Image (cartoon, rainbow, N blue to C red; front, side, top):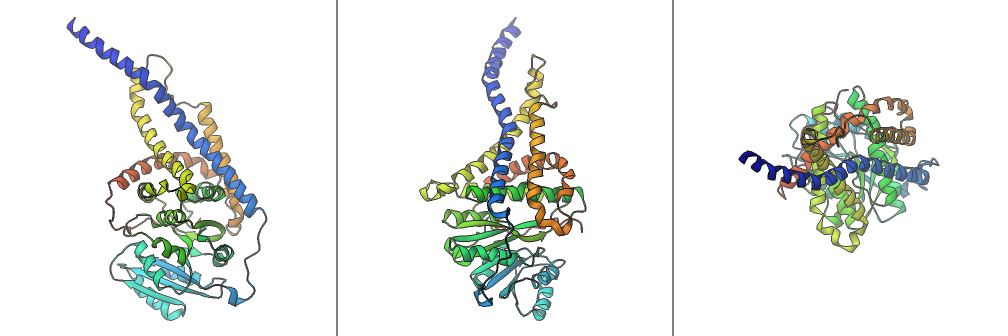
Length: 437
């Protein structure tokens, strides 16, 4: 009798909790399903607008009246342990279809033979200057140092393992010439290594996700980030915002927000192609995406107060969407934690966490494939020399399994790291997986 009298209040409390929790859990479940569905159509609609405005009619290669009208350009290459790649990178740069440019390579305390190769190349190429930092200072410091030493107002920044398309400089420079309010131009990175499943999936990802989102964000006004591997900057704009921050783990996201919060515009130039190496192991991909997630969360934390200025209103929607995407990841975690309890306590055959195929999951899958189809159709013209990207459409069926689940984990881990990180802590280089070649 005593046992039953003790158990009865506990059951009543549980029933009250379930009556309060079930509507909330139902809302969370629907939000988890419908948020990516809603955003997929937002990205598709914005990308189509961008395509119709800027890509539908193929533009001729930008040209100027004569060589004097080409503004000088400085190409900055921060290098850390790039001995295997920098020779090819600088060799390809010499093929730029541009009459007036210099190259500044920054050796940031490399432990391999990067510095020796750079000195060798400097003797071979008259337009190459080498800057040596004796200790590893981080990519942001390397870029800041090179920017201060650069002779040009327009700076193009690429990674030490990137191959820049010969016409990329012309395509990017035209934005600075046409509009004095343009502070940065982000290029169009393409995947070089495609020998594994992860490499092939990333070909589609950079078209369907990265490229589509950049097009859509540009259509709606603000861009979350320039591409860290290929971006151009106006030196005056960089000086105005204090250049890159040394304590932000993703300097590309940080500088994008600093520029736009200061009133500068960022453009996306799909014709500015740059071939890059990406991770092709799950460990390498995980570490890369955790870093990206941490960098995005650091930006959300640092510039929260800056958004209260009326002049920052253009960034409100972008900030809100980023915050919701982080919340979405944590809600999935909460949903998964609660699922076993729901299955145990469910008194009916119907569970809120039915994992069998349903019309919502089918709609999400069809939308995903439709999104990939639209983006690959838009992006295919930029890979005509490689046979197009349409042949990678088949591999995108694996994208939700490989990347969506990983994205939840990397977002959670990256956000926690951003919260725990001490402000002012220097962000330095880390060894990354560059895939199989």
